[in-house]
Image: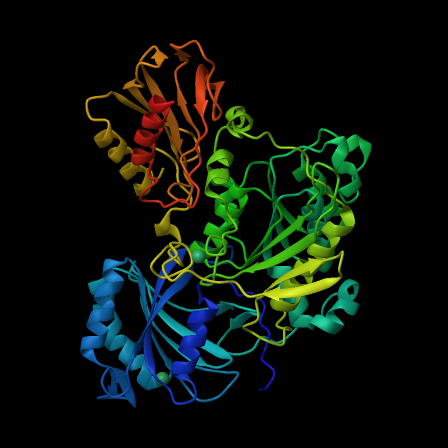
Length: 459
Length: 128
Ligand SMILES: [Zn+2]
Ligand SMILES: [Zn+2]
């Protein structure tokens, strides 16, 4: 297949489509051209409002996608009505989809535009939600949105978080050369790849051994904005594993140390430090505005809330962990590092039994009661910088290649398990429970703001 | 400000229904969940007092999170023995309490709902 254009994130309205849905939609649209409707939730984003596709209703050719009165083909009135009723009932955006010929560029025809003007004002009245039309080629997308407030706006980009983090626009962006500082890197990533990194807003949850390496490298790569989340302070026993930490840092917030390092690596970086636990609404609100989340905190609550954000706000992430089993006699078992790609709409951490619900209950207790609630008191687990580096490097390389479209396979998102004692490296595909309440359309997938991951108790 | 997530509101309603006739106090935990205290809960003749409060947290991560552990007011055994495993003296929300640590293995969100688990914990304690 021809090389796909790489587009940096755009300002304005965007649509995110989970890669499984995109695979299904692509098979329906290309090469013969079918019709379909996407249902989408809504959320704010760092560069503009976001529509979050969570379900696809395909129109069967000849019964639901029929020869049109004006254009080539059109969605049948009964199909439109049923989809609009679902959009209304689920408070979802209604987005009608079709395909055009071509590859890297796409625009609505005058027949398309005329049909939007005939149909969408009424449809918007029925649903009370954003409605609109989308037109795709395999490498490009355009959209015409009719917003609930009565205004009308074009769609700036369509994002598909898969093995690569695809961004489709009506036409490819022309590159402005990367600054001389990133010249060598841009020779691999391309000028548009470098510009992409610079516009991304990336979160690092957990700023310990793994997180401090992530922050250092993300800043040097040229990622534009980092959200840093950790409520912990530096202890003497952390110093061997924290990048550029010194004795004077003992007692300081890990967010302060990480921010200082990131600033030194890239003075122009924008930093959003949050010295709270990840489940704190302030941290969750920042996470929901990110383009990518690194999960480097190994608690059940961090796993749960990041998993929830990935699924509900369609933000890709990667979980990084190191396991070093040592028994009470000092025998070392099979060490492994795990780098698990978390994609919206795909087998999540709950589906893969990676969150313990009792541990989660304990983590959610107030600090004063958390330790007593742990019936078996915790003992410090081993931690070694070289093992942290192995897992962090896997996660960072995956991110850089995904963000700049350099992975061979758009669908490959297997977890990587390294076993350094035997020097084995295995790939593990995640499994998915058909009715998961997080990663399936039956659950909170793509529900954005209306799903209330972020909540405050009022009684 | 958003209202409490419906999963937690429903769980609280189910607890009130499970313990009809008992005062149930519900206090926000500050991170989207609630602390629940059921008053005047009978724990049987093995304990003095034989009636106490039963407290637990339904966290913002419910129903994905288990309800764990549970707390009751300080109790002593009428046979003079000490408490067995899974029961220990601790504090809860600033008051002395016994902590009851019964995790739900292979947790099922329906069987192990906040209301049903609270009643099972009460029965389990009474059986000790
Ligand atoms: Zn068209
Ligand atoms: Zn799942």
